[in-house]
Length: 252
Image 1 (cartoon, helix red, strand yellow):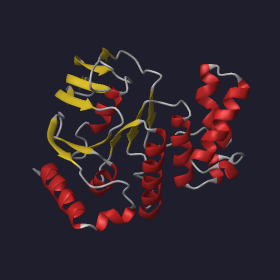
Image 2: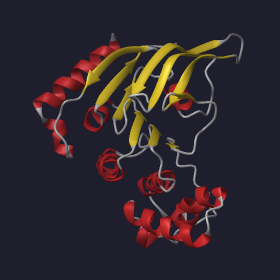
Image 3: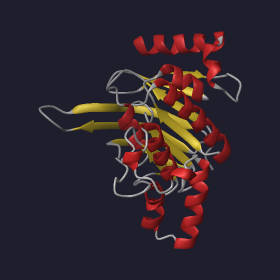
């Protein structure tokens, strides 16, 4: 049994679009430990989202392998869920029905599914909005629905692609705190792409810095800040030092 739950071994990916091929990822290696919170940062357009899609089995590498529990990944597995930058909710479905969707697709019996939905609504703090429609909610609440929809499948691994990027600073801070609470409670493995360095330091056990495209890992930082990490952790000297080092690694 591998010591890692998720691995990328020498993966490369090129997209043949437009006039010339675009090499997004080249000979990239990533190891993720069970229960770890890993954040991935890097310059804009460097291939962060492509890497996350490869790790989730949404696209396949041209060479190399992605391994889940030491076995090659050839399609999206049921124990990996993904939260995207846009919540991608169905506007004609209520909060309950949006969160219920994955279980309906899986054919989970109605009684069992409703119990899971009820538990998930409580988990993400949306019980009182169960029968509201997305247009009636704030952007932050919509993202909580998206997180709830991902967590209702009880994934072992949660992949997050800049899920709070479009939100205001205070809402983003609250949702980061909420995400850490859910990670501690559910004990899933998290891999999050973000362009926000301070967010990465606040959330992560480790931060990987990607090089400009084609992406490879150019630096790694272990975040030895004590947990739990309330938002005020960001104002400590140790936090500031780590954020500065990561910013420099991106710029270099």
